[in-house]
Amino acid sequence: MPKTFTIAATAIFAAIAISSPIANEFSPQIQKFFAESVKPNLSDPAIVAEVKRQNGVHADISAETIQTLDQQWRAEAKQGGGALIDRTMASAASKILKRLKAAHPDTVTEVLVMDNRGLNVGQSDVTSDYMQGDESKWQKTYAVGAGAIFIDEVEFDESTQKFQSQISATISDPATGEPIGAITVGLNIESLL
Image 1 (tube, rainbow, N blue to C red):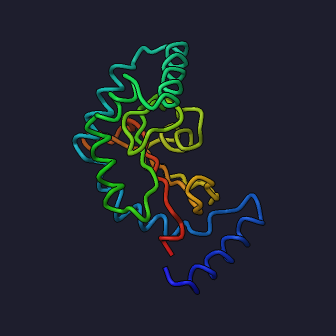
Image 2: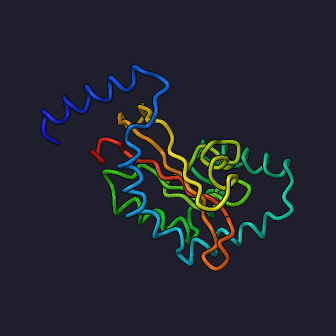
Image 3: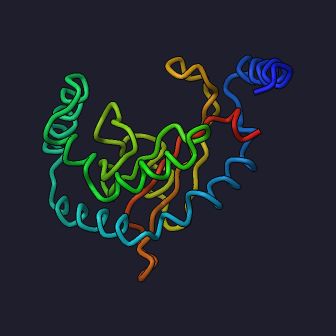
């Protein structure tokens, strides 16, 4: 990246960061990237099948079991892996999401797909928790219904040292239009400028 662009971008982002909470001024760029690069994957038969399969498995799951799975995931994440994480990261959905991230290495920071309970179905990278249903990425998409899209605020990520935002959307069954889950894509805002 040219030095003058980096300096200008840093100044812009510093001004944005000062006015907290911020509206996401980059929504048009985020929506354009999502429409062109992510949305076509939402009807991928492997992703749809994986989400529907997990919805069936979790049809009668209790809140206690969800909490147990989330605790197991968190423990495995700290240990660098385990049965639940390994199974999820090896899913067909995760393979597609890893390819999506690899196709846009400067832009996509993470991708994850959730079921109708907000539980991880697949992801490009291991998330810190298994249960996303208590977060806006699921509550403002799947819980709202088909066609819902939520763009989160721009935040500075300490681990990557980049300004990032997330766009989330409801995943619907292409055959019925019924909402079945949600997707979240983390984006490096600087690469969208």
